[in-house]
Amino acid sequence: MSNFAKPENALKRAEELIAVGQKQEALQTLHNLITSKRYRAWQKTLERIMFKYVELCVEMRRGRFAKDGLIQYRIVCQQVNVNSLEEVIKHFMHLSTEKAEQARTQAQALEEALDVDDLEADKRGSYISNSL
Image 1 (cartoon, rainbow, N blue to C red):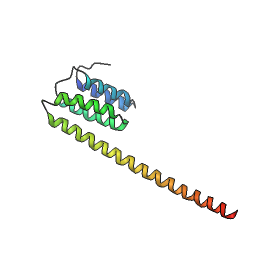
Image 2: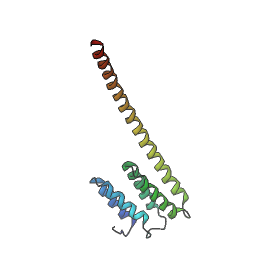
Image 3: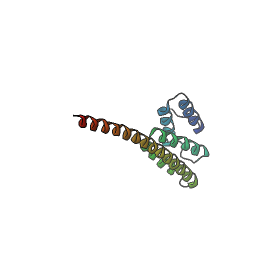
Image 4: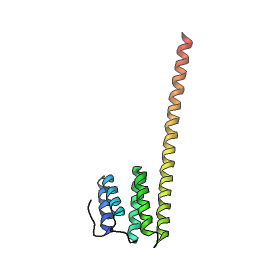
């Protein structure tokens, strides 16, 4: 776990890791920052970090990480800026809803493709049994 002098540095490092395709490491970097006792005072930068954090959690389907991060963020901003927590949760819900809709669309497309294949199999099967 690397300690960063400023939260901005952790965000920058996470974005660099994402750029080279190491999303798990980027998520772990942000998670370490969020759960660190060193950054318990609310800052606007922490809100930006949380936006990136929930984006990664949704993209990588890491529900437990998202839950843990949101709980830690609630502790940080509970007394100072509750609106920030609200914005982060709204962002999380929006991303989750989009991802769920995308998955639903893909599932329907696969189901339709499988239904077509099954219909053809039924026709061939009945054709063969009729010819016998």
